[in-house]
Length: 163
Image (cartoon, rainbow, N blue to C red):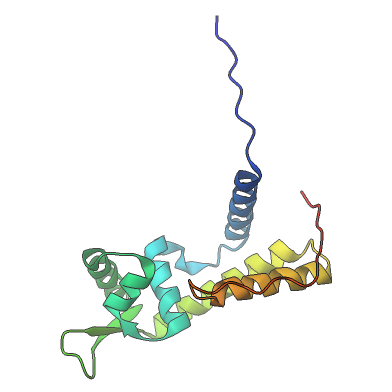
């Protein structure tokens, strides 16, 4: 006779993570035009990094993304073969190679921006204006803060009891 096993009750943090997963899956499924889906996650991260920060050395991007030089080489080779990026000589350091988005890479970056804009819009659509503003300010702060700096405390407390 089998005994029934019960799943442990998820913690609040696990529920938040699962909610984020559901939102990302929902937005991904509702935006099949996201043509960057043929790229893997790491390739999209490289394109996003270049789109946000402009051309940089391959080593700097690898450091930012926590990828080894050999992993970066393989990823950049594939992105270059597909026409998303191009390598350029560094103007002052012969040992370094700059990475730059091509027109196709810029277009892919813009599609990624549109995807994340839709993700935000769909995610925040259930919130009131004050809660939306609070969330957007928090996201902006988290996206800009340095590892040493903390976001300033929120001055307005907004409660949300959504599912």
